[in-house]
Length: 395
Image (cartoon, rainbow, N blue to C red; front, side):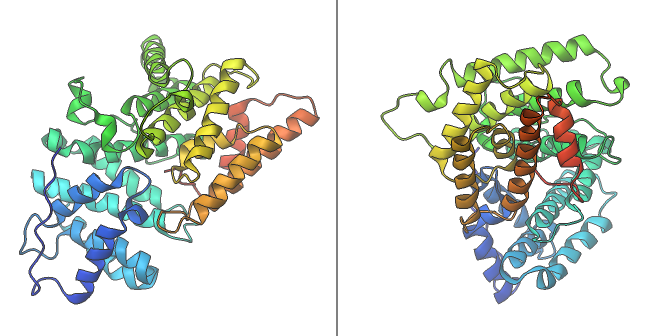
């Protein structure tokens, strides 16, 4: 999708401070919109923010200011922009026209990223904003107006965070009130089953996200009524698993010879594929972790992380890191954690939390080995993730 550069507001409509915040957002979008492929997404957000050059109260524009101000000035100075977003969305809540619906959804997603970016997100308040987005897209009768090719990057952005929240809430507290709707891919390419490269929108293949949703619901769903057709659910999971495995190839991405260097987005997509297959093995197939094919996946994942050196994608990093069993593998993982934490141009506030959680999983695995017991994989995940004092973000 070709996204035009935004038409900036005139100096009379945009003050000096706001101009500075806008420049920061445009130049440092990886800090505010990571870990997804943020360049095209940022341009789309700015396009909506400046859709009306005479309207400086656009909630999307105020959301951009809030995110940038949070990074530059901290929480206290950015609150005024955050409050303007909330006020604007509340005032237009019942309007169902396409423009208002798109703006409100996007503004709420920006508030969600705002909460993810806070250093002290001890209460896990990000989930409130994401659940608001889920409520809108599942109850608003006008949502079909957004199912257009030009909005695909926006809908895939929502879907990515919906799916990772599904993983989080099912392992943290079961059930979790307020986010009961199953994530659903809504972009036009997915609905029409076209050959469009929808995975290029966000840096993660859509079939990986779909497989993760099926896995969560098949493996750890608490209410059987949530799955109306178990056999169909199983069949869908098997087909998606085959597609993801086929994309990785017989020998894994790390062994593919190429004259040109592998693009980082390609490595991130493969990292998501590997992590998803590892999770399916553990959660659905209940492998012990010693099987050859499973260990090969783990080895490929750790080698890929070592090749990348840094990783801001919390979920695949967490899944793969939890599988490290020997000192050499864990040393590679710790190096990735440390280099990711020091990568100041990227969102790294979540690295400490992920590292702490991974170490807790390692401790449980080590205790299993010492006691010659095999505690079920999901039991360990539920205990570690559910033991955190707040609902953790894996996005």
